[in-house]
Image (cartoon, rainbow, N blue to C red; front, side, top):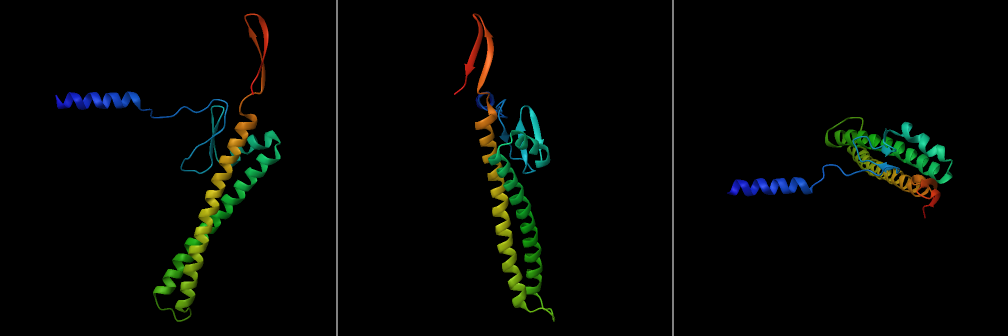
Length: 164
C-alpha cells in the first residue's frame, strides 16, 4: 500500500513538473551556461560573443552596440583583474607566511590586500558584463523581437495586423 502511494506521488510529480522551459520563438534569450556568453535566438544557439556580435551590429542601433561593447570591455577587464588578483593573493600569502631575505612580510601582506581588492573588482566587472548582456537582450526583444506590422490572408481577403 505504501509503495503504491509513493509510486502515485512520483507519477503525479512527474506529470506536473517540466524538465525544460520553452524558449520564446522570435525573441533573444540569455542562457546561463558554463561559458558566460550564451544567447538563444531564432532556433540558433550562439555560444560566445563572436557568434552573436552580428545580431547587435545588424540592427545598427547605437544603444545595443554600446551595451555589447560595454559587455565585452567589462568581461575582459574583469577576467584580467580576477587572474591578477588570484596570482597576487597566492604570491602574497607565500611571502607573508614564510621568511624571505629579500622581501619583507609587510610587502607580502600588501600583495594579499591588493589581490583581494583586484579579485573583488574583477568579480564585480564580470557580473556587470552579464548584466549588460541581459539588458541588451531585453532591449533587442523590446525593439526587434516581434514584428510590428504584418500582412496576411484571411477568409475575406488581405488583412493588415499591427502589434502594439
